[in-house]
Image 1 (cartoon, rainbow, N blue to C red):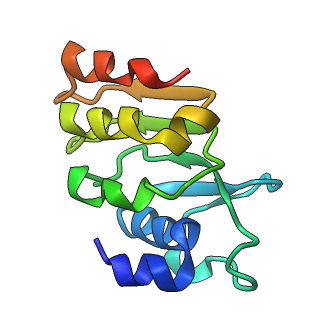
Image 2 (spheres, helix red, strand yellow):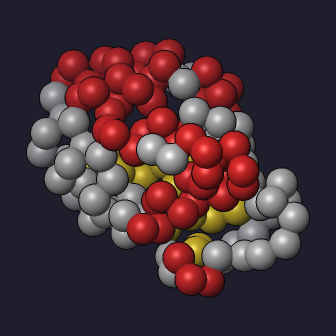
Length: 127
């Protein structure tokens, strides 16, 4: 995790870059369009684009990068579908993120073979 990058561009931009490099998609608050191409991330004021939704279907996100999600305050939906590197420790990390506890409305976890009941139970902090 590049903590200097997070400090320089903010948590939403840094998380967007990480997610897109891993093959996920992001949607920003107030926009309908999903962004999936790293080279076409929006430019402009860094604090303008807040991640509202993450679709990590078939992506290669894994626990080591989840620190990028620490500062995200507007994420309402996360979809983890066929994420082969997602395991219980990833969900434990998500469940402990205080910002996520306040903002998340919907989470889908589908066909993530390394997730067990232990990982699902770790999400109990999310409303």
